[in-house]
Amino acid sequence: MKNDYRLDATDRRILRELQKNGQLTVKELAEKIHLSPSPTFERQKRLEREGYITRYMAVVDASKAGNGIMVLCNIRLKQHSEEMIQQFIDAVQDIDEITECYNTSGDYDFMIKVYSRDMQAYQHFMQHRLGAMSCLGSLHSVFVMSETKNTRGVAIPEI
Image (cartoon, rainbow, N blue to C red; front, side, top):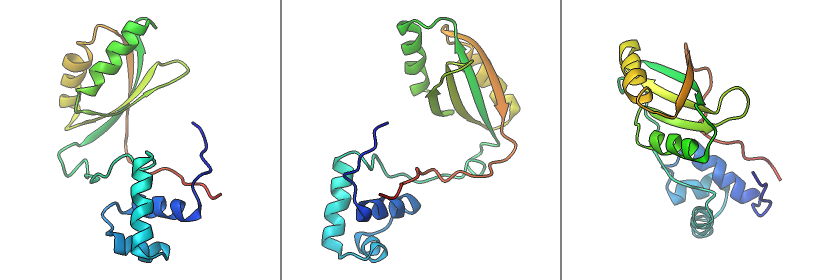
């Protein structure tokens, strides 16, 4: 990842505030960053155009939506061929239970975050969704007992 120092202190304040609440109106955002609405709007649109802000979304409570367990799965592929790697990357895009996927170094090739209703549903998911992937060599499931921090944001360093 490349550091981009084109962001000034005001841009960084905008990013911090929008990470806290992406539903702020331009007027509310302007008040929080101590700038008038017009330049605030222009800066926000520029941050969107330049890809600093990639999307806005609602954060849904997993358990209230019916997902009682969160599982982190470390995955090894059968081979490290471009074809198998791409096959796995393509496959996870269409699986709703997988909310995050990272290509990792070390003992495993990928780590995925999976939400499931319960253990029985996770077992079915493992056997029928993950197990159906011919590129999968092995997986190691870690069941999350409790989430102690999840800001769903990124640190915005000072200049």
